[in-house]
Length: 118
Image 1 (spheres, rainbow, N blue to C red):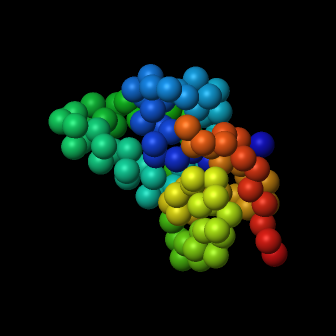
Image 2: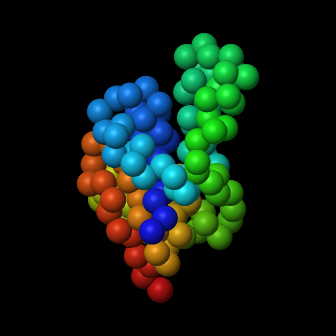
């Protein structure tokens, strides 16, 4: 089963914060929206980390960055009620494979299965 990771979950994992072990356990083969990936990069750049160090830290992580295209944006917008109840962001929803995906976010219901309403 593919996991979808939120920016806050990735940042928590990298910083070793609460919930990081759950995120680390599901990182291999996970999916991350390009919007969430940008959030993670922005977080560390804003904290003063040099670009090369940010890239060196993130590049080895075993997840796939998923483009935030129009179709995914439409799905995310249409399913906002489902994702908002679980405390998930629109960017997270945009990376979800609605056929068999799951999403995680630290501090919330982790590993919540998400299903399509087609």
